[in-house]
Amino acid sequence: MARHKVEICGVNTANIRVLNNDEMNYLFKQYKNGDFFAKEELVNGNLKLVLSILKKYNNRCDNMDDLFQVGCIGLIKAIDNFDLNFDVKFSTYAVPMILGEVKRYLRDNNSIRIARSIKDIAYHALVVKEELTNALNREPTIKEISDKLGLSEFEVSNALDSMKETLSISEPIYNDGGDTIYLQDQIEDKNNDMKYIDEKVALKEAINSLKDKEKYIITERYIIGKTQMELAEEIGISQAQISRIEKSALNNIKNKII
Image (cartoon, rainbow, N blue to C red; front, side, top):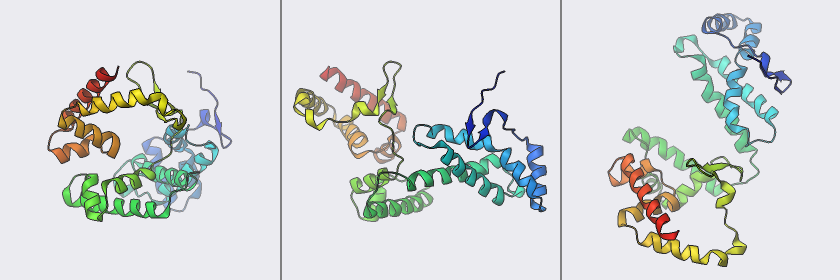
């Protein structure tokens, strides 16, 4: 099979060697005994792990060379801290560390600046989310987090959303087997508000015609931003039922406005 040469940071990815488990174990033992050449082999033998993680960020970073170097920093940290006594595969241990470095780099170099007050809410929300997850043995809902913080659901949801990675407006967001819908297709043109007044009125009427449960789920999903799992926990039904109700409601809306 032909291998295509792709260079990143001067590394020819077609020639990257992948280590097997026996080689990894041997090199880790050598490195722990002070053989720093073994560390170099461990790094070179796991570069494809870094590359596999970076694939999903192809459209989110202008300089993949920089991102590759950041991923390698995470790899080196994983190698330095890995212990064979963990009884886990190195890749299982390394992936979160590499991802952490990559996400931290993208967050710190984001061109969009988030207000400090919103960042503080997001930080406290994440702390409370972890506490509630441990206490409830499940992921808490936005409402449970907001009640704990004494804030509105919108404030908490908005703060958590602000910490997510930015997307390209050319990012595909939906495909049902037909035409792909891109993020840019969903961006409102403020200069053409009147152009879509009929569609807005029809949409409002279609939503108002829904059953109470359908209307509630559509509102919470697409305005508040709750997940299906959160709604399932809140209402007391399965996620599959939430999905079916949501799909039925969307079909009803579609049928009324087309």
